[in-house]
Image (cartoon, rainbow, N blue to C red; front, side, top):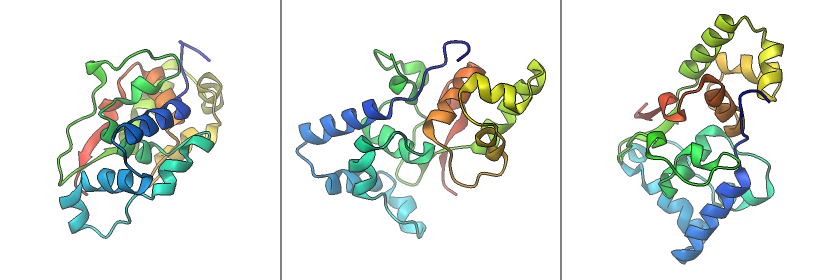
Length: 177
């Protein structure tokens, strides 16, 4: 991989969730409820389904998570996405997520991420396969962001922002829909 691009460490995210859950003496159901309640006003207006406790508890057995689900967890932990890059030793305030109050929810802007990536790809004279090789993913994972409605993997999103040399927060907004 080029430019020191590090994978998003889903195992470390799970370990942090589980450590905070254990410290607070909460069940996975209670954690899911707390995560969902962080956007209580927004949830009251929308007909979304809450995050499932199994989405959280099964994170330890999966190799990844969606970029949107990761934001729920990161918000609850009060941590940045960059703090879970492989080899990260601390959280840096430069990478803090935008504030999201109870009537908002942090959300990746996939159109903005795609536009920045495509602009830089063109500037560098890279084909989609060449960029995919740099990022360690498939070309379809990159070109699919143009039409993605909901999410991509957190690992792919974080590889892209590192390649762009920008913080993930540049592509995350406190959404109200």
